[in-house]
Length: 152
Image (cartoon, rainbow, N blue to C red; front, side, top):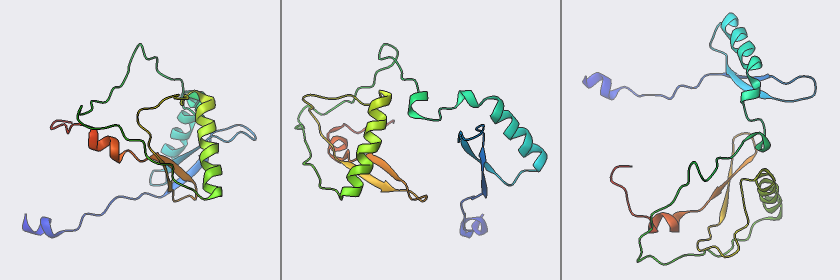
């Protein structure tokens, strides 16, 4: 047991290969591991091609949930004041990327205009390994106002 505690545990990183499931010019790419035999890989790709209509390839493919089915509410401490973060200045190229991502999500119906928001949080762009950026929100102030759950 002592020997096992000293042993370093490394994360498993499998080589991936990009497979296009689209027809012609249409790009529907998925990543498939290269550690399997070619027979199993071919069967997996055939299965993915048969069921490619199940995957959401764009924001428009993702159907929203009705608020009648599910609605999420955040519990807040009543003694905490509402916080509206001041707008951060961004580089012009970052602002264009943000506008592009927000427009995509707005057109798909994921976002809606809030006239008088009680909480305002800044957008934070996080660079990905492939050169793209992930748009995140800075919810630190909102997290401070939320009661801590001992059993999350």
